[in-house]
Length: 503
Image 1 (cartoon, rainbow, N blue to C red):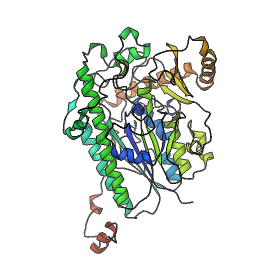
Image 2: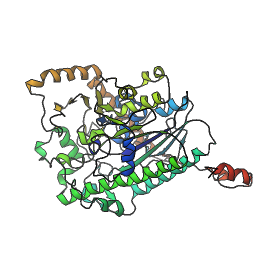
Image 3: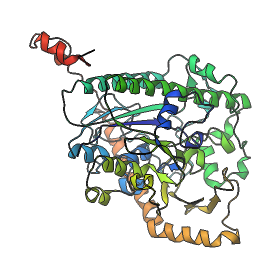
């Protein structure tokens, strides 16, 4: 079979609630994403596997939940023996390349990628390890705080912009290089940005697009601290939220910058797509995010919760033979790995023993999905693992420390009414309880997380003593074999570097 080229765009902290029909909301200034959505299969109810960068990305790569990968938080090591979609594709004959962020922790900074064009924006070591033995502990130098909200505004360059400018530059250059045909294998290029992740700072040209925006305040205003559920209170405390005087003006500016950075990303993605079109290459394109962003709904910011703003992500696939349109069935980022393998014609028997997700292609052909979507969270702001299931119109959330939650998203999209004590929903609750008990042993999950945290605390302290050898990826460019050098034939160099050659 002819294996398709694969171009994967991942962004960071982009909430799926702004993609109600699977594509960008009409009022967002995102022309490139809107054009992509028009020719894509779109999934309006797609969910992350865990609402935090490191665990979510490891699950996206592997199709496995954090309880299987062991990537519980943003400082948990990602084992080199865990197969990723890059391993599966590379084994099947693909060249695999990453430009951008993937938040790999540990000495393996490739995880199946044959080439990595940039370093990561976040550290690769164990320094951000939470500790369940110290409940409520805040580590201000790496936990979120509310400074991203109170300090939102305009700048022409930031740490994050510098990074994403670099990611887009390298990705575009790679698309041009792939067109030259020096390597005849099919390719998979993953382009992973850090925006619209906070801090909420945007370039003026994108900020000005939202001067008259009608969406600068949340649908659900901030609740009193006492009215929040126990996990939400832990998130507020982890973000030092009770000590921050956040005004409506702060909220407007933070949301405006967030929307502006979606437009910034749209331009970056558009540049990569323009390079693909200009070089006459064809590729199946996937667009998604690692997790969402609460954007001040209910007084919550960032992620770390299973609430819709944080847990829902955009997901669309543009591929020959897949009819464009929107699917409402709940799906998961766990499904992306097996879907990529399915698109590449890889034998499912070689993949399914390693994954919790399932390929999305049958759903696009009208075959009903019966498995619920599963999520886990065992990182900062938690003191014991949380789990969730989304099936049909309902979402179920449980944690050993907290009361259960059950929401009917069809009648209560803002998740304001917990139905656990409603007799009319007793059968639904019982069904979710049985499904959760069959999937999870929460005591063992908790013990595994605690053991991992304790090991990492010891190892990190040890490795910071004496000579420190960082694990951060160091991109290497072979300058001796770029452009023109005296061991090369000038005519050959110019010929193979030109594409297209007939224009």
